[in-house]
Length: 164
Image (tube, rainbow, N blue to C red; front, side, top):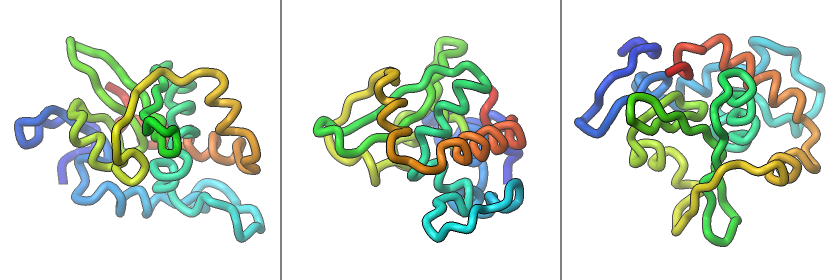
């Protein structure tokens, strides 16, 4: 396994680092448990059993936390009908765009898309996050503070995965 903090070239497609460098980023994120950091509420509907939910389910909380910690720009990739979306950050460095979410950083848009096909399958658009997006995401969600705390803890504990 390659060091997560190392930006490596892969298959001549681009560069990546973070959990992308693991054999299976999903398994790695599933092994990072909320209960390793915080006491879980006594609620069967509490969604944060692992960091994997920060990729699939609470990507918006993770992207906003990346903005808060590293000042990255949050973007939304969404289907034309606005029924599916993924929130992530974009960073431009050394004349190259990079895409950042819970998996880490990649310069390959194809690699980035491969992990979010569940939410964004068909025709899509990419746009900067707007304040109304943030308000909509937080509306009717009972665990915003827990989601942000968990996201920021993961970002700080695994900062080598998210710093370019």
